[in-house]
Length: 219
Image 1 (spheres, rainbow, N blue to C red):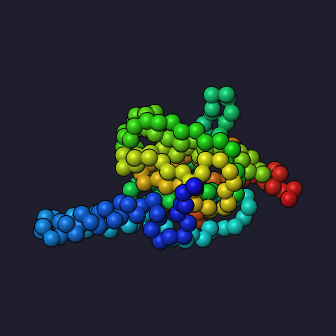
Image 2: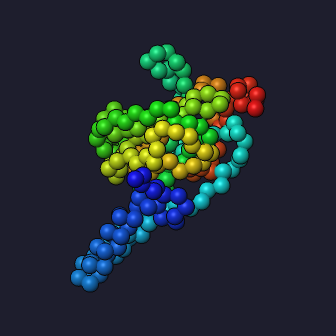
Image 3: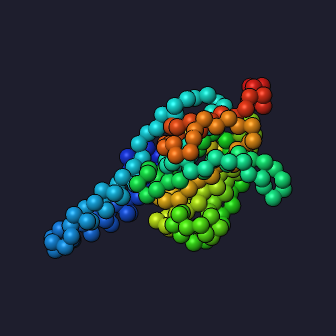
């Protein structure tokens, strides 16, 4: 039987265990008079981290690219893959207090998902890019192919994906990331409208646009 994942719940189902556990600990600490305010703030923080409000995309242009995660733009640069292909990389850093829901940046089909098991070092550690757990998704659109590289951080014990293969709608929820970063590898001719240190919201903020002239224009 397939597990039912979060849809429109105000607090993501995947966080209910954390929230209820911290609430129980808060009650115990309250009755024992042992730092109840500390556990109260942890309880409230867990609700905040797993909040799941509806998001309305800033634009519905079929060529626009939404942010897949809440966080701050940390890097925008051109990268070259091992086979010589060029991509435009946009990296978004998410912290524990940003909403944890991952949302599809485009209408696309996940054609491949690769998981790389690893550590959970803080993202500030230079070794985290090499050693931390990650999931690499290949998304095929009518215009081109992009990749999402989802990297765990210190507070993430896993990267939760609701599906590893199949279609995604524009801004659809597809996973949970408590702490970490997401890199988007885009076609080199994509137009990026955000800047480093900009704050973005998953399923709402527009990162940029695909170049016109592809198969999209034939529809």
